[in-house]
Image 1 (cartoon, rainbow, N blue to C red):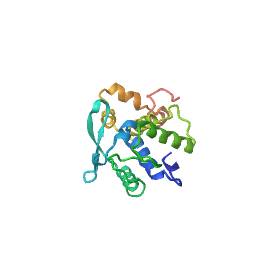
Image 2 (image 1 turned 90 degrees about the horizontal axis):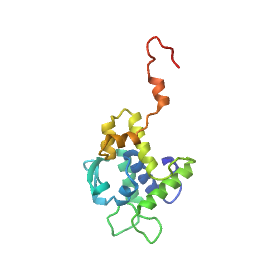
Image 3 (image 1 turned 45 degrees about the vertical axis):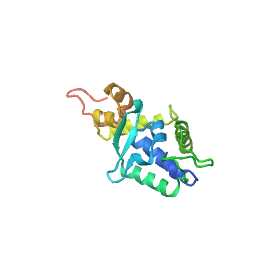
Image 4 (image 1 turned 180 degrees about the vertical axis):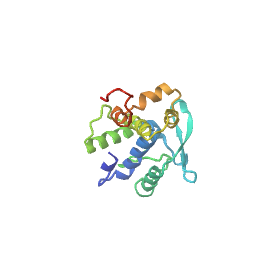
Length: 177
């Protein structure tokens, strides 16, 4: 899906938005509300204003930071507002939550992906599942997604039973399935 962001006018913005959603599991509203001063380039982190107006610091992965920087240098129109992401057609204005969701829907369509959830939230689920597959503990996944309850995190991070069956050891004296 991220690879589908080539060869068209919005590619730099959309790639940066999709990376924030898929690598950090941000909500569409969190991406839309991201301000230039929220990014701490020297420390590789960013402040996210989430649910309940809670502000939390998250690491800024190199790939995501590079995509945002490229967009800011080459793709962002001149705006007198502090929002990181803006519309690409005049009148230029900060992106809304609905616009972020539409970016995801367009990318899913370009990539030929038919997802059960076709908005930005599917990438939040994907980020959690990806972290789980890479061996991240549930508590760590919950911290990145900024969940207060482990039960909520469990709803996001789905276990890949196919992969699990490949690595699971058979029970002694019981034939494998």
